Each structure stands twice: as C-alpha cells, then as structure tokens.
Image (cartoon, rainbow, N blue to C red):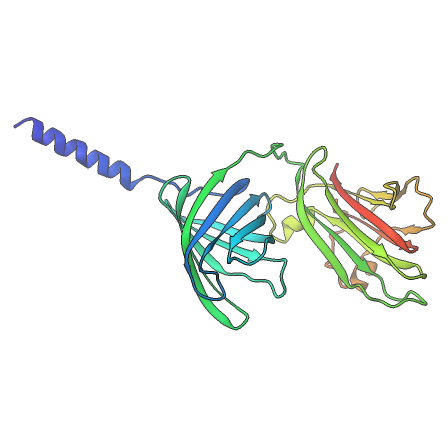
Length: 292
C-alpha cells in the first residue's frame, strides 16, 4: 500500500524531467555537423553525406560524398525555435545562382537528431530528410572583443586611359583572429597599362549591417608578389603608410566620393574600417586583413 504511491511519484518525476530536457543549443558556431541523407527529391540528392565545419560569423566549408553536389563554401542561418528544435538553413555561395534551401533540426540528444531541407533550384522544387551528428568544438583561440568577422573587397576604378574595365568587384568574408588567423586575398593586374583599384577591409560597419561578431579594427596591408608591403592602412580616414616594396605604384587615401563612384556601400565617417586606392602595374598582389 505504501510502495505503489512512491513508484507512481517517481514515474511522474521522471516524466517531468524528460519533458523539460533541452538539447538544441542557443547558438551554433565552432562545430562539425555530418548530415546523412535518407531520402531526397531534386534538386536534392537522395543519398550521401555532407560534412560541414561551422565557424564564427555564420560561414561554413563542407565536403560531400555520394550523390551530393561537389564540396564548397557557404553561409548558414541557425535559430533555436524550441527546447529541441531549430531552424538551420545552409546557403551554398560557391555556385551561381546561390542555392539557399530552408531547413530544420530536431535534436534527440545533444549531439544527434534529424533534419529536413526544402528548396528550389534549376526549375526543380523538392525536399530532403536525414539524420545528423553534431560535434561542438572549442576555437583554437578564444575570440576576444577585438577579433571578429571582416570582409576584403577590391573594386576597379573607372577612367584609366588605355585599359579595358573588366573587374567590377570581388569580395570575401572570414573570421580574423590573433597570430596567423588572418584573411588573405589576391588579385592580378594583366596587360601593359596600370590599373587603379579601391581596396577595403570592412569590420565595424558589418556590425551596423547586421553581421554578428564583426572585427572591431581591421588592418589592411597590400603586398607585392614577393610579400613585401606596398602600403598599410589602419583606418580609412587616415592616409595609408607606404611600405618597403619597390613596385612602382601610386597609393592614395580613399574617400566617400571614390567609394560611391564604384558602387561600394558607404562607410561612416571616422569608422575603424580600412581602405586605400592603389594604381598598380601588371603583376600579382596579395591583400592581408589582420586585427589591431
């Protein structure tokens, strides 16, 4: 007569604990996720795996097996919707047009669960389902307030005599941290005529545009093919400092007018974003974005 009520009470407590278990994390950065397809209709594959490295700034790299499209890069959106559910929408940015399906995650534990994807591409609308395994990692260097996400941009300026304007803009976004955790981009000037380009390293203004974890104060360094600095800028309101490179170049301070002339989005006056205008002869060049 005494044991039964106690067993019933223990069962009730166990049910309550299970009901309030929470597996879906509030945010998802610095993690590896392996998605295994169990079914899919075009434009999705029906079998295969996608191994994703999820990084700060909501960008990821991925490799694939089976019938899944080739490996590449992309961005993702993650948002917790319940104790064990979340929105997870990965966008492949290395193909044109960009493929941006919508998706959900349902956690059955802190590291496993099921996923769904829905989207349209190339005239086909379909869905995919499968299971996932999540491994949360620790960053190699814990981000501090001065580390963060930045973008590197190059715009060709208009009006160079004797040249054909072939480049409008290239840009890339990545996490910038301490030591060797820098953003590196490169470009080549061809032909025989010099080319004038606007080069920018945008960090704090990304925060105003809704990008989380933006780099507070980027350093922009333009190097020649041998790795010698041509010029360095630590804030677009200041003139670039010339380096030791022997390349015959002309370096100018970027202005709001010069940015507007090539369609670049505006930078607030006095912001810590960096930029410069460089007139360069034919050759290969490297741009490094680091943190102050």
